[in-house]
Amino acid sequence: MSVQFARRMCQMRPNTIREILKVTERPDVISFAGGLPAPELFPVAGILAATERVLRETGSQALQYSPTEGFSGLRESLAEEMRRRHVAAAPEDVLITTGSQQAIDLAGKVFLDAGDCVLTENPTYLAALHCFEAYEARVVAVPMDEHGLIPEALADCIAREKPKLLYTVANFQNPTGITLSAERRAAVYSLAVRHGLLVVEDDPYGELRYAGSAIPPIKSLDTEGAVIYLSTVSKTITPGLRVGWAVANREILRKLVIAKQAADLHSSSLDQRIVHRYLLDCDHEAHVKRIRLAYRERYSAMDRCLQEHMPAGFSWTHPEGGMFLWVSCPAGIDTNELMREAMQQKVLFVPGQDFFPDASGHRFMRLNFSNASPERIRQGVHRLAEVCRTALSVEVASANK
Image (cartoon, one colour):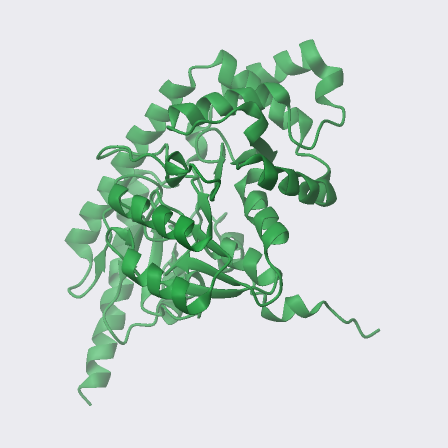
């Protein structure tokens, strides 16, 4: 039988990270590849207690269908959380989604027609690229530096491309770990309002700051309804409870609700109520503080080991939070080839190519430090540095021929 797939499938790429993760279960492999939170830090006891209480006290409701917008109690809790993040939000402004990944997809479904332009950071979160590709959008990358998106470059792209959306990860960006400065957040918002550009602000990592001072989200500046703010409990509670949320003006939220109805009717009623009960009964702030301390230790271990072992010519970002850092390799190094050599040495990373809309970025790699102990990080960086040193010597020898 000859199968005819939808046209959109022609431009959709497989997720490199999901493919790499297939080999990470081997105990002798040290992985810096996936964006995985540390499982030993999951609040298992708190989740167990919350689950038991939910099922004991409200089991019939928790196992029933629920409104597409989400469980009202959780929407109230998340509206309070948004106010702590300097965003004025009522429960009616909050839509519960199946992870923030679904919210990205819903934004694409609601706003993008084939050929529409989406602006992203360069590089950007690869699964967001997959969402936009699914709706046959034209993705254009905006240059960034150590302070995030460059406003002058953004203005040029807006004038040239007439985009419909800007997608940004302003806090501890995936993949680079870079944070958009407060001044540039204001500049981005001003440009968006001036040109009628909708901003999708994805903030899965903002609560994981372990250095510097917190910066209010772009959404905190939003008086015109120009920003859709997305977040999730995946990095602060557990990704297994697929709970995220979107905050937007009521007109946009109504359209997102309609799109979600078509996608899955509603997010898991049980998961939503477990998260709500956990937030009410447990010391979530203390739990997040514990995560921050652990990730700061792991980042410091990776940064220190990279300084000690990586050969000259390699450099990397120095994030103040989140789960990733971004390595720039010398000219001539192809991290797709480097990945194959690294796998032989039982250490994994994600090559940079898939984070770029034009699939460039062959001399970059993303390293995740949240899902390995400091000792495993030291072992893995030592292996990776040896692979890099060998590749660099081969490249130098080839250039001198």
